Image 1 (cartoon, rainbow, N blue to C red):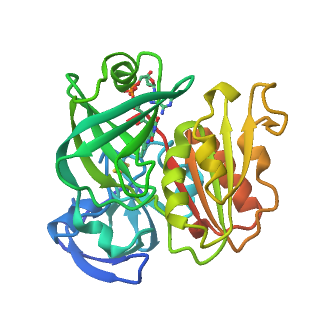
Image 2 (cartoon, helix red, strand yellow):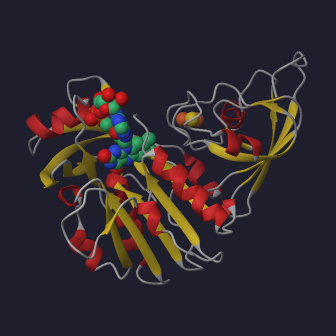
Image 3 (tube, rainbow, N blue to C red):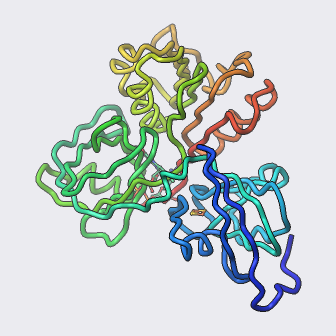
Amino acid sequence: MRPKDRGGGMSLRLRLAFEDGTEREIAGLPWQTVFQAAQAHGIELATDCREGACATCKARCIEGDYDVGDASPEALTAEEEAEGFVLTCQMLPLGDCALCFPYPFSLTGGAVSTQAVLTAVERVAEDTVRFDLAPDREIPFLPGQYAQIGVPGAGAERAFSFSRRDRAEFHARLLPDGLMSGYLAARAKPGDRLDLSGPYGGFFLREPVRPVLMVAGGTGLAPMLAMLEALEGRQPAVLLYGAASARRLFALDRLADSGARVRVAVEEPGGNPSFHTGFVTDLIDRPGSDIDAYVCGPPAMIDAARARLRAAGLAEERIHCERFLPS
Ligand SMILES: Cc1cc2nc3c(=O)[nH]c(=O)nc-3n(C[C@H](O)[C@H](O)[C@H](O)COP(=O)(O)OP(=O)(O)OC[C@H]3O[C@@H](n4cnc5c(N)ncnc54)[C@H](O)[C@@H]3O)c2cc1C
Ligand code: FES
């Protein structure tokens, strides 16, 4: 809904419900986004870009009128918008509203900003580098969440997902002409100091009360590695992992030891005959409706996976996605 009369200085009631059952009722002002209103009450909602581009702040509005604000169609698809999903860094309530957040209240404590020493950097596939950081201050993250890492000398930062449950290991895809990619491929050496902040994001392993399906494209595998470690075999897990070619696959040894049933898809024919030739989303076959699904990778893959899971009868609340958008 587009803004009409925004009601002068009248305050609005916002009911915020978190995944763990915690509820908060706060007052908002007509010109404040939900994120700004919550922040004014000491509640630091999950955000990253704060420009409607990254989808980190996504929540669902279940009651009330609002203006969706300036949301990029990649971060909030038309289908999601029709279902009441919103980007809380953009959403302007037009009256009293109720929102549900896909993470527990404990995540609203805010991010830690620190520096870290690069302790290892290693090429693990044709276009993928693994690197380890030793932060000066501990960042208490949940498996699946991500950090913002400064590119040394560039005055820019990039988002990378933790790929271990308990330490700052990351996997980065090397992109042509990419700022961080150029640093990691050519200049990075142990001992370098980098800025680091986090944790960010609402993509993390939920309490494992039902079987888990993970769908990863490219370095979208990184948060799945952390989540599989944390799962510790407490629920049956199936991991579907796709890459453009066999030369771009990484961490297959870790996957073999993860306890998950792993199926691999590569788009380029050839390589291991046990790999499916085609898209990773081709492997989503009758997933069942009593599972939790985690999907991470390029936006087009996420949209295809989400559509297949929804068509198979899986509720939106059971599908957790992280889009690897340019950051
Ligand atoms: C929440 C989140 C978590 C992420 N976690 C990871 C991770 O664990 N590992 C990982 O490899 N990436 C991850 N990404 C993506 C990563 O942050 C970006 O790809 C990053 O910007 C690349 O940095 P760069 O400096 O090398 O490239 P840039 O200098 O940002 O870009 C170089 C060129 O590549 C294009 N580009 C940038 N990013 C992408 C992309 N993702 N896909 C296609 N083209 C792109 C740009 O448009 C530009 O043309 C994550 C993104 C988000 C939003
Ligand atoms: S924080 Fe809202 S879209 Fe990025």
